[in-house]
Amino acid sequence: MATTTKIGPRALVRASGGPRYAVAVAVDALGTGLLRPFLLLYGVMVLRLSAPVTGIAMTAGVVMGLVFMPAVGRWLDRGARSTVVAASMLVRVVGVALLLATPAGNVWLFATAALFLGIGNQAWPAAHAALVATVAHGRERDAALAGGRALRNAGLGAGALLATACLAGGTTALQALAAVTGLACLAAAALTWSVHVHAHPAAAAAGSRGDGPAPRMRALLAANVIYVFCLNVPEIALPLVLVTQMQASPVWPAAIFVANTVLVVTLQVPVTVLMSRYSRRTVLALSGVVLAASYLGFLAATSLGLGWGAPAVAAVSVVCTLGEIIYAGSATALVTALAPARLLGRALARFQLSTGFGLAVSPAVITALASHGSAALWGGLSAATLLSASAVATEKDQGVQAPARQPPTRTRTAAACGARPTSQPRREPRRGS
Image (cartoon, rainbow, N blue to C red; front, side):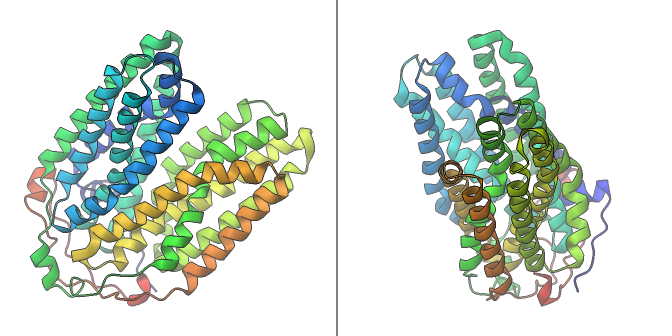
């Protein structure tokens, strides 16, 4: 049984890349939250594009962003860490600049801006995970990844709330929000670059992890496509069901979304640390069971009718959020534990490809299933998620080796981050993956 991690706030910040990098993540998330939820409104209100055209351009940007992930993975495997994170932020700065320069009615320039924003949004998770995996090790790394997710969700939520309050200003407010987003990403990129975290491929290859073969992770990657549907349940599935099928007030999906954000921010780290007593693969499979149970709960809740249906859906959404938290705390951590150090970037890029693909197709799948009724939607999601959990639980870990006892491979990390070097990585049992 793996050792449970107990990590204090200061140690968590150090393991996450240091105070300076934590500030960069917060600033970037706050700026991103100002614009990303309202990019569709920007296209419709400011650029006078039709909603379908705007949506297609945004989707194309997300999909094309995935095409660049193999290159990002190879860049990471050459040792780059903070440079790649900073580049993902600078790419979004270019996207915002193009957005501000787009004249009304010009769909192609808007699509180009969406492409740059999509590249940055897709590259950031893999680059961030690689940076944290270089600074921290073992279960401390898992907690640091969870802390980064909590911090980013808090920033995104705060940015979205601030932007909502500013929307009364109309098109001028949307343009101002876009400009502030660009400035925030630029400041975050400068802070991130100043951290100077860099891995040494040659040193990594000298350790026992570096000698291992690339993990196939076929079942894990396929299952992840289904798992990530849970991220769009509060934003797409529940509003669709509550407002269009149950005729409930729009206040219900809004309240559920806020509750989801608050729960993720407050519980992501504690739940991840609590579950660290079990193997990462077991925890990931358990998250699928919890998610599948919540989908069946939604099916039962929607059958209660108008009176009790909406409150029941809100109550079940807490269970769904718990499943999301368990999934997010174990999935990326499992990939970083499975991958040899010399191939960490490519492994994380492949994982982000599966995540991005799942997020891209889930709106279409959810709306298509919902058109056939609640049983098709929630029953289909539950069955697919249970099948995915089973695949995760039964897949064999190929090429997993214990990390070598060597200092973390980074240059000037402790000084640049303003933190003391983390402890040397502890050798973990095989089943700790």
